[in-house]
Image 1 (spheres, rainbow, N blue to C red):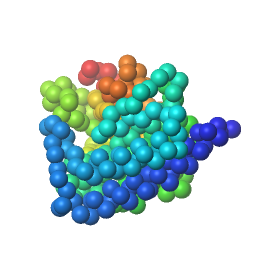
Image 2 (tube, one colour; image 1 turned 90 degrees about the vertical axis):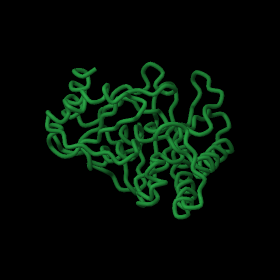
Image 3 (cartoon, one colour; image 1 turned 60 degrees about the vertical axis):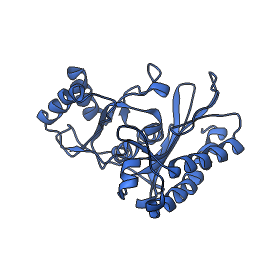
Image 4 (tube, rainbow, N blue to C red; image 1 turned 135 degrees about the vertical axis):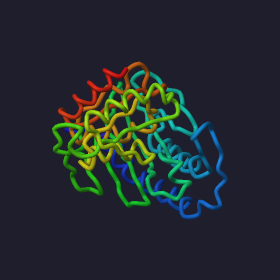
Length: 264
């Protein structure tokens, strides 16, 4: 049976992410008026990111003041062992967002005691809400999803993530191995959305050498609800420092893991 405390949080997340998505989408439609700032190479932000995160943070603090919070824009609150923590990216895919592409989303995940319990990911410009978790079947706009039937990465398309946090010479050997193994790759600027496409069976798998927690925790909840395999992202303080992430059905996951290990 689902813990009623967790069920309540899940219900709130489903409502809140649409409210936050509507706010962010308003900024998206008027993005010509935004003040864009650079936080580093290929790392942008605007008042849309900050104000959307502040909305989420405020609503969560009002409903569950006992929980901690980690957001890309405002950082982490005090966080003690055993305490639940919300992990939020107000706009995952800021570069597509400011470029007028629709491949961006709002991501909200919840974890406690080292386990991701659920996640919600909403792409308002595409009107797609992904959700799921440990005790919640993965859904897209409320309809259950099905995993990709691929038996290898050569069947279908695989999500491949890359970040400038990794040097090209450290990434290219893995990419070379993927291509030689028959990988047809996909990248649209949002790790959270790409992972949800794996959960929904649009992509056969996902691999990224380094991704931050706010970019993937919400989607990891959806993967959990879809019953897919994934690497232990939270190992070695992945929550605060990020980690590599591999996901897929058992066959694809095993192949991606072997290719990642061979190129490490």
